[in-house]
Length: 366
Image (cartoon, rainbow, N blue to C red; front, side, top):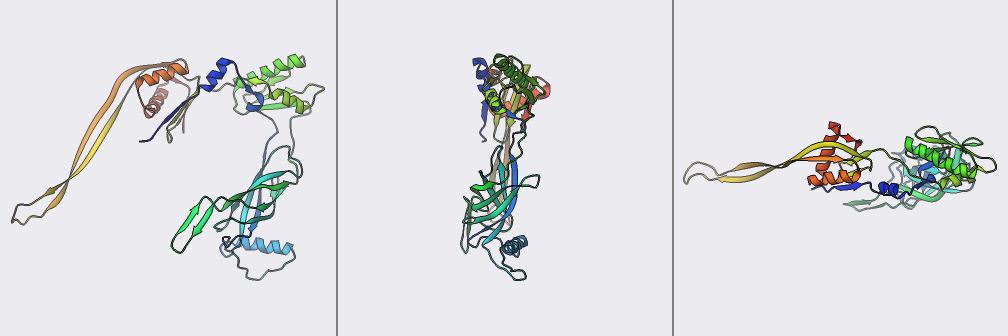
């Protein structure tokens, strides 16, 4: 029997009633301030016979010859056989405002038929952004949690030994572009776009700037962004820090999220149901298989055979008509609980109510 979990979003309701809000820095980001993804190609060496086979992974052999050529060692035309090297893709994320010489974590993933990267070291590999410019260089020992053990008759693999991480394995060689609005204009972008929240953010900023700078400096642009002017005599960094501490109560759309795989139901505080009558009954079908032995009469030419016997029984439970109406979350939950159904039945009822047009909310089924 699958277990179900029902989660009701009461935390936002409690915060709204108590008047507590959320810091502006937790629901918005500054336009232009973002992370940048980096990618590169490299070689992991020092593997204990678990690397790529050069015949099955020709790019590994080509990379090895090119690397040795750059070091003044010419092995072109020679048949190289080694299983201590593996070709990998190196990925990383470059946070904003990191300067030259800062370090970031990198992830390495095998490209060929290597069986494990445990014990290997990444050779210096440049990491490029979407503009094809090199922003960091990665090198270091690979830390992998995967384990591979094998014998003549059995092989055991735990985790993913063909990928790993290098903590602080890349050094920043080029700073990412910094675009934080114009000289005297900032744009705050909502993490969850909503028209009401954008208006509340604008009003909270204007209330602050009227007290501090004697003027309204914010204006909502759309459901996602709010334009803010930077006053004279203050830096943009200090101004952003001051605005980030302002508290705003974010709004959220009326929505019910249903995950049928795990049986999770999340109901928002603004969900309402018009008055409807609901009847829900479950049909249980039981199939019983039995085997009977057919024995022939003594001294006859018959054979003893086994004949199957199937018994099917059907039973229907429930069927009571109930009225469900919810003007708020508490009333809605009490109305659904009065029906006395399991969460699996509540999921079916919510889908039926949505189809009837009585559910005044979005129903998202995952």
